[in-house]
Image (cartoon, rainbow, N blue to C red; front, side):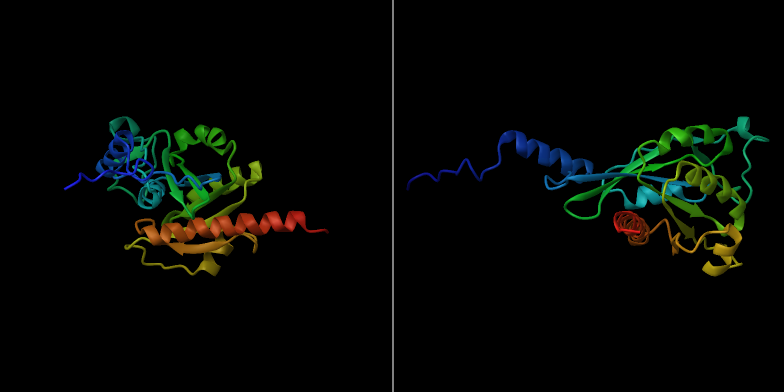
Length: 221
């Protein structure tokens, strides 16, 4: 019997096979060759509101986290408020990536929530196309600084209410909009930062919002 020969145009090369094996072993999703639009998105909000969780749940690659264990040095400095069980905190930023479709990729940067790290925010906002403000209704005052800085930078944003299991108040979106003095044109939605589909819905809402703003700027006044 004659030996079978492989077609070099269809057979994987050793380098391709090795790269594929490395990708599968690490659990990472390679960026598609069709990707042509990369958007920088920042996730901001108060301490312990779920920014790291959101980036981690939606990222298609292993996210970069800069979480460190909270120590006694933070006592009296960090306001843990309703998150007394939290043992780690982001000290720089989180980074993840998600492809919304074959051509559009979002690069996600989760900002640190503690006040002593807020000086990093302005640098994170550089080159940002849009932002997500995560809100914990038990500590809505923590959202004011994020909204103020985004408005200062004229960065479009959406507000996502991360519903926690122990939140007994269950304020409606209309009540939250009123409390945050959000204009009607700013999207306000519910989410569960732990659930990938919910987090992706938040990001799609932001992209749709950016698209509508771009159309409004292009249309004649």
